[in-house]
Amino acid sequence: MSLESVPPKYAQVVQTLQRRIDAGTYPPGSLLPSENQLIQEFGVSRPTIVAALRMLREQGWIDSQQGKGRYVRGRPMLSTVEQPRPGQAYMANPETGSPGEVLDVGAVAAPNRVAVLLGVKPKTKVFLRRRVVSHEGEPSEIVSVWLPLELSEGTDLTSAEPLPQGLREHIEARKGVRFDHAVEQILARMPTATEARQLGMPKNVPLLVVFASLRDAAGRTLAVMDVLLPGDRHELEDAYPIS
Image (tube, rainbow, N blue to C red; front, top):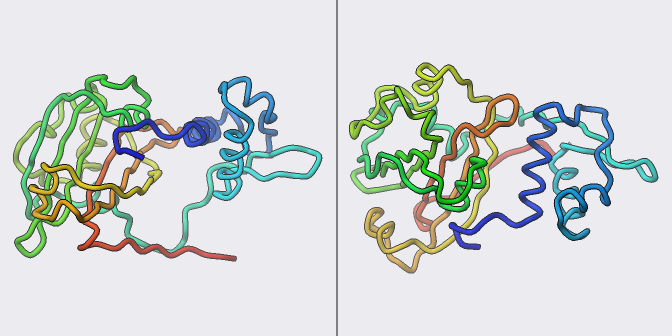
């Protein structure tokens, strides 16, 4: 799937139901609407709804009981195993703590995927701060943070200089919001000519792209971050309980 494409229909259903569960529209212990009700509401096929419900069950958001329906469990507990996440460090650590260069700052038209994750119409003007991060003197990754325009106003995010605060701390302090959790999506694609040049990588090496929807406690997406990682320089590792 292209980076600029809209997420598949089942993923959009999953995101909507997750937001409703987080917001308390479907509280823990309540019965989720039936497949037929969801099909009518979202205007999609039964396989699409079945795929979305299967993903929610596998992720621990809902549970099913034969003959009774699907019950809401709530947002799954975060793993107790401490593991760094691709976007976590960039939100927490000051930009001044890592060498790099600010590439883009300002209002831009939201790409389709970013627009869907932020809950705005495609091509809506949003704020972008993009930076290339270096390691041992070589470009290592490109980090982009996308915000609604109103969330960038009154901040130092428009500065071309690296910030002495972490992005999370800076935005929370200036705008009075609070980030609660992130939902990540990982995909692979080939780099554009510009990305290959900025990262000093061959055009035939794929990128790992990590999208993180940064949300408040109600499940509202406050910001979207994407991290571009050259596939020949990075590997992603995770740990999780299986009991």
